[in-house]
Image 1 (cartoon, helix red, strand yellow):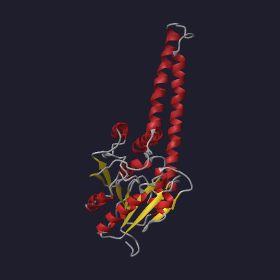
Image 2 (image 1 turned 180 degrees about the vertical axis):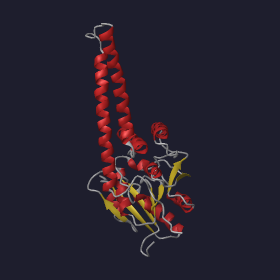
Image 3 (image 1 turned 180 degrees about the horizontal axis):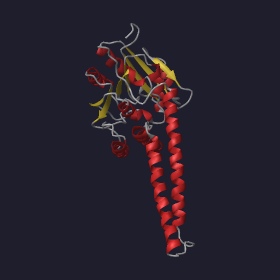
Length: 313
């Protein structure tokens, strides 16, 4: 770590949090100073339409990033993380529901050798409907993503800096950062943290974000299982459908030629033809996706593996 590089970067996205921003900064500053290491605080104003930006502008120490309009929480996290200089990057929400005093708990796990530490809101203080949808999303995530994390929606997380060397965030991907990093071989764990009711402002969570999160979850599922072998998914499905369609057409041919049955009013010839055509299209699509994935890795100058270190003994 260079002399001017802080040990800790704390990144917080803000959207219409004028009632929370000063108290949040005070608590973060207090918690960071108690650690006894150099730190920086980064607030990202995500196009707030209240006095959040004005309130944040009066705070110090602070690096303040202001978006031209509302781009979403994931974009705010991405901008803040890219601006961070710390050896360890901590993220948390701007609504005071996460407690900055829990940051040392995350750092203990980092110091124990983990690369990513996710907060687990063991006793949540959210309205019933929000907890209900969150539990449903967590159940789906456990089935599809299988990242071993109880509460991916908790924004209080700590990462080693190297986690973000090749990671860009889009959509609602901030929820799945531990999963994405676990796929690359980073060591991920979690720790129970505090959670408090929202005192000021309104929740930004709604059904639109839930749908976006579900779509991103499906993408994570696909990327985890087939990002290195897309042809296996689409090509395999294409071969299966093509085989079934061919068998249907062969049987229709046998019935027509050997049993003299009329096919004019039967749907099976159309079904067989459809299966064959869709199977061919899926196989070709699998080849194209495979080429696109290889191009992705080639243009980013990386391969489908991650090296922790190289030693010469």
